[in-house]
Image 1 (tube, rainbow, N blue to C red):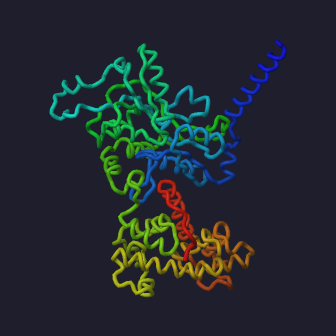
Image 2: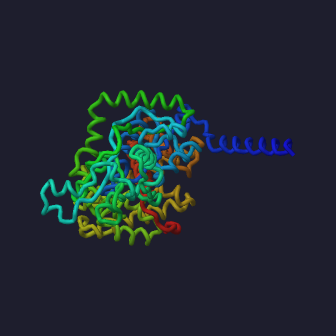
Image 3: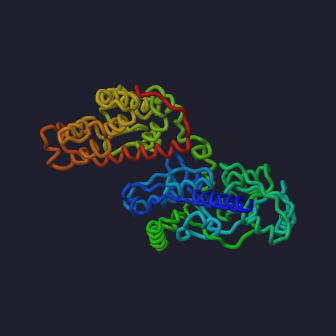
Length: 477
C-alpha cells in the first residue's frame, strides 16, 4: 500500500512538473529570426498615450518609439492591440509577438515570465480618489480633511484595480505593511486604467490605483480627482521580451541607451506625458478613435460609398487620409484637389462640377476606383490582391502599373501578385534598362512613391481594423 502511494505521489509530482514546464515553455525566436522575417511584432494596449488613432493618424509614445526601433533594425513593424495585460505575456511567450511595448511596471513576479529591457522612466503608484462634490466652494484645508492621506486608512476600504496589473501585488504587500486587509476588486479585463480613473471621477467606484504620470494626465480633464496619496516608492517602467531572446534584448537595450542621449527621445515622451493640454484635446475630441469610434467627420459618407462598391469603409478612409488628411481644401503641386485629390483629367472624365465640395469629390474618386477595379478584375481575381493594383493605379496612373505587369510577365515573375513581383518592376521603371524596354509604353516613373502609397494605406488600414470592428463585406463591384 505504501509502495502504491509512493508511486502515485511520484506520478502526481511528475504531472505537476510537466504542467509547470508547459506553462513556462517559450518559443525560440531571437533577433536573427526577427530580421529574417523582416518584421517586428509589437504587442501594446490601446490608450491615450501608448497607442491610439487621432484624426485618422496612428500615434502614441510606444507607437513612435517602436517605429524608430524597427527602422534601426531594418525591418517593418506590426502592432497588435492586446486588451488584457496577462494576455500580453502569454502572446509574447508563444511567439505571437516579439516585444511588449507598453507602460509595464518592473516587478520580481513578472521577471518569472519575461525579461525587461532597460527602463524608459520611473513613476510611483498613487491612490486615485474623488474630491468632495462641493470642492470648488471649500478651502484647501477643508478639501484635505476629506481626503485619504494615510495608507492605514485603506484598511477595510474597497479599491478597484485593472486586472493583471502590478497594483494587486502592491496592495497585498501594503495590507501586510499596515496590518489590515484592503478589499481588492479586479475590474473586467478589458477596462483600461484611464477608464477606471474616470469611473472614480463619475462616482462609479470609490478608489483605484494608477501610475502617477497617467493619473496626472487624466486629472487634466477630471479636475475633481485627487492623486496625491502615494502608495509606492519610485518604480521602473519598461518594455519586455522573451527570457530566451538574449540577442534581441541586448540590441533593444543598446538602442534605448543610445536614444536616451538624443533630444528626440525626450520630445516624444513630453509630447504624450508632459503636454497635458494636448492630452486633453485628444481625448475630448470626437475624432479620438479609441473613445469615439470615429475616424473623421466624413465617416458616414465614406461608409455609404464604400458599401456601394463593396469595400471596407476603413480601407477607403485610410486612402482618403493618405490623399488629403481629410482636408477638403487640400491641393497638391501637381494640381490634385479635394479629399480624394482628383487630378484635372479625372475631374473632367467624371464631370465633377465642384471638386472642392466633399461629396462631389468623394463621388468622383469612387467612380475612378470603380473604373480601375473593372479593368483589373479582368486579370486579378483575388479581391485583396486586386485592391493593391487599384490603389497603385489611382496614385501613379493605370499605364505605369500595366507596364510593370508586362515587365513582370517578361521576366517570369508573378504578374498577378503585387508584393515583390509587380511592385518590384514598378520600382525598376526608374532605371533606363526597364523604362526603355520594348514592352513599356509609358516610360520613366518614380515607382517608390506608389509603392509607399500602397504600403502606407494598407498599414494604416490595419491600425483602423484593430480599433474599429465591422462585419465582413462582399467582393468589390
